[in-house]
Length: 138
Image 1 (cartoon, rainbow, N blue to C red):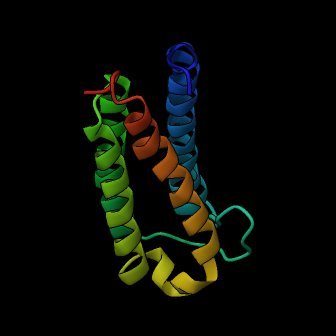
Image 2 (image 1 turned 45 degrees about the vertical axis):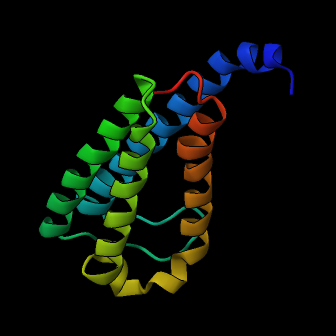
């Protein structure tokens, strides 16, 4: 791939990455807190099972969301470690939610496909893009 194309495409790819991660985080917060906790329960896109978090789930969710937002901030500051913060916080919350939290009630296997698809997208956005543009990221 030519270096000129790589150099010219960086800004577009970078901003698409940041916008997608921030948009997904805002959507997740809205679904979990407003629809899930205060409403009748949230569902994953394309899945008919509803998740109703408890107060403990909400507190744990907020703690992990701080890590996710910090990861996005680090990626915004062109630091590769932001991707690890983002993915690590998501993985730890998924583990919590599938063992103790709201996903445990319906079973992880019922929503495994959307989770795998989201993680594939997260890996592309938070690991592969900073790796591809490693001359731009610290």
